[in-house]
Length: 324
Image (cartoon, rainbow, N blue to C red; front, side, top):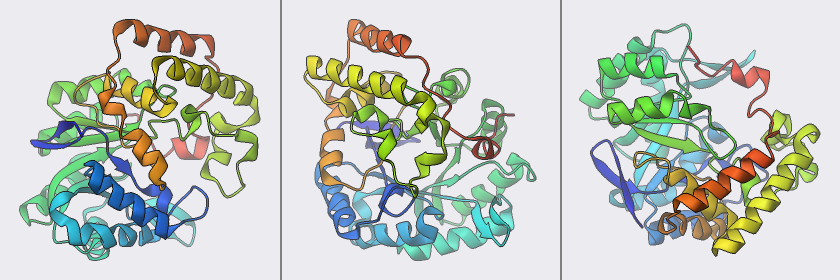
């Protein structure tokens, strides 16, 4: 597995997003998920991503079964901030809550130090400098090695980085979600920060295996505009045409989509999520696929042909994204 730098450390050029093993997408299958984690070790995919909110902590507990006995083989990232209240889910970026959250994550993961600790969002009621100062304290205490931010604006990145080095910024980025190209990705490149795309396969859409009309009501995507009937014909046509191009190029749609992302910058480290070994093995082939200028143009031509992809979030979800 090829490597890329996150902070000053080499990690696998693609990581493993673990959310779907316990949260948001269908029914968990712990046996298959454990097998997928072990396969990741065999394939050299050592950058694993989770969060305390995934399955209300169950995802961290699941990962601990493979992580703890293989601690030196995994660069583990987790996140804090979302918390369930009687009135619903809120985001708390306060230093006091962070102190509680990090101790709980360390216990669930069964480790002494988290490699990369993200603020899952920016709390509008807490200055980002205050949150990052508290996170820097975790580094000084040895509980965290690197700190990161998620779904954050370029302005907030600069404010945070001035307080303490930010090792990684995570946001949604894929062939269909490219708003980070305007400011966030260039800012990360300028400051030497790794940019970590989540949902790099557009939540499965670009694999050409997702049937939008067949998503169960429990699936997180059901409430997102992109996966609604208004955009179904456009997006399924795009996925089919993209799959045809992948076949022509001798790869799978997932490999082509991830290779396109990797071609956008050496500081980009996608974390495709899966709980299935077959998908992980497929994704692992992407770093070996190097696209030339002509192939990249053909990908762009397809995107231009099917532009009506729809928004990635509904109104409620957008309220939790820092766009200051």
